[in-house]
Image (cartoon, rainbow, N blue to C red; front, side):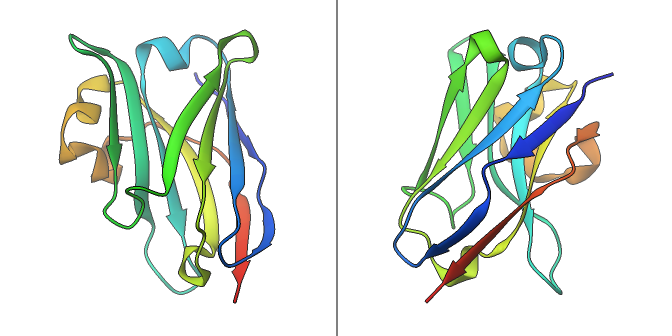
Length: 132
């Protein structure tokens, strides 16, 4: 069982930045695919980004087209915490953001990460609100 706890959401103006945190139990970051998803009011949940260190090429990251160039990952291994650094935020980024973990880490190596049925564990979410 993996427990995920998100934090770091808040209200910012367009063009601003936020750093979301995902604290995980156990060794999820070293053996799972970890992803961030978001769900805006009235819309379906969608992928933002994903990361794994399990592939032969080392760390692999995936980004949704809407996130490319504006988000990146960082982590604090001592705290078992993964961060999603978001910049140049837009009002359309307003949503509840969720951290997720997938046992089948290989989904992180392709667009398969966007298939939400493959994700086994979810956090409770953290709200991001971007005003214009």
